[in-house]
Structure formats: C-alpha cells, structure tokens
Length: 66
Image (cartoon, rainbow, N blue to C red; front, side):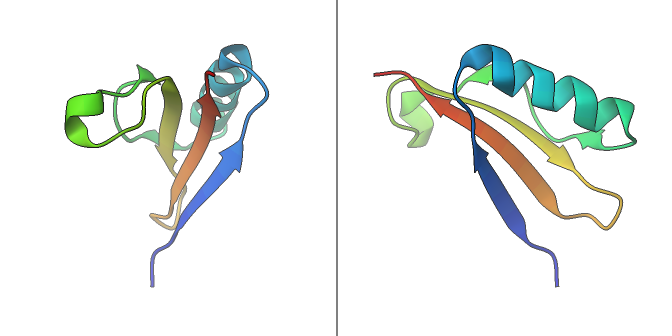
C-alpha cells in the first residue's frame, strides 16, 4: 500500500532543499515545485514539493506562508 507523508518545512528554501536532495537521492519529481493554486483547493501561501520514493510513496515538504 502506497502512502503520502508530509514534512513541515521552516521556509520556502527548505522546501526547495528537500526537493533537490530527494531527486538527487533517486526520488522522482511528482509535480511542479512551488506555491500551490488556491483554485485547486490549496490554502493561500501553500508552498510544497512532491517526490515519489523508490517504492512509489509520495513524500511532501510543505511550508505555509502566513
């Protein structure tokens, strides 16, 4: 069974660093990096990176601007 795990980041730079490290380690990018569209149900200021791990699990780092 595949899972989605999200990690809270302390900044947008941490989200970017997570994405770079995960892809360098063999993860597969799972969507565009950056702020998410509120029209798609994301709250305002939701910055995230999604990467699939080798088992197909969706790993996310997110930062909420306030």
